[in-house]
Length: 437
Image 1 (cartoon, rainbow, N blue to C red):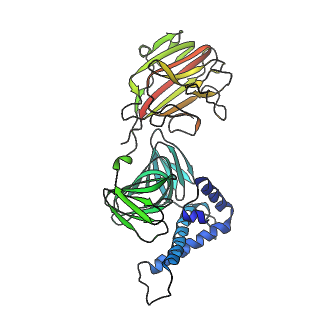
Image 2 (cartoon, rainbow, N blue to C red; image 1 turned 60 degrees about the horizontal axis):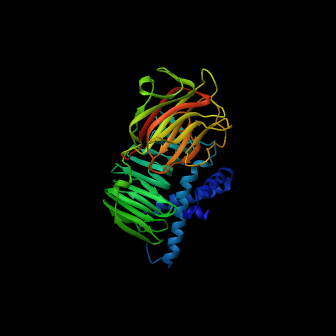
Image 3 (cartoon, one colour; image 1 turned 90 degrees about the vertical axis):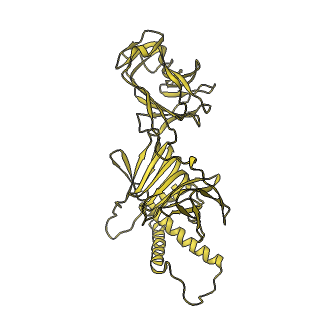
């Protein structure tokens, strides 16, 4: 509990702590009591000056006690969604945050969620784990956040967010309201403004003020350091804030846009037949023992584009088999050399797989992914990370992951199958994006 209050607990340990709250009513009740006490004290005494001389108390002791109560109350708000005592049956809070994702985003949500049009609704207390891509979060009509993966964000309330890990850009346009963003070591309260926060386990937390003014306070401290536009603060030890120039370029302004390089229908003239005699129609490429190539107009992903998505819809071949000891799938080439493949790889395993070449063994999924189906490949040029996902966008969890040398780009793709295999493609969509807007 003390680790949670101090903000020093790891994400896996915090997940275990949340599970205990679901199973141990007494533990949840303790946090409820702290929250009620904190609320009552704020209602009664906030903004008042103590009368008389009072009892002498060391500043250190007062600070520690105050920090304990304040931290407990904050955590109580975070965990209230997991357990709520009521004389009647439990009720679900109607408070939600609307979340939209970039096309290449990969995420999971711990807590209650819903769907509203193209947005995902995040219920109060739910945590968004953004593994890749970006997410636009609107906790209220006047506040917004743009989170970049990998990040972990908890929706505490319409005026409070907790960024446990990652990077985000935050904005509040309400003159009368405010947005507070906490991290494991600090809190930032906007004063009608825009700011960026970056927090990682292996580096001190940073706050960058992009517009207006922001109050920065270290956890366990009463003093609030005011930063103006163009200035940034870095947590320096347990007692200090190091001020320096803000860097707006580190924080994206909007969700990344993607544009399509190629998609259905298939045009036979666009493809160069290397060998074999495949059937190429507007709706399908089908054959046994064939290889067809198509070039990009320039190496991709390139320029401002850092992410490539390729969705391959494999159908049951008109003759032959997709899964064999040979290979059948899609390859990416660079200057005449094959650097990446996904599909049924060479070998006896009957499953979709990933081959990043580089004399690295074929990467197989933990659970076999069998048969003709739709699979999407995601590649990030900056990190070199490659992953396979069942279905189209929005992307589900990866079932295969690998890595290429960063900054690798492709100038040509190939669809085909070896002499003992067959591949039928019902559709293919390749798009690029991911540039910072």
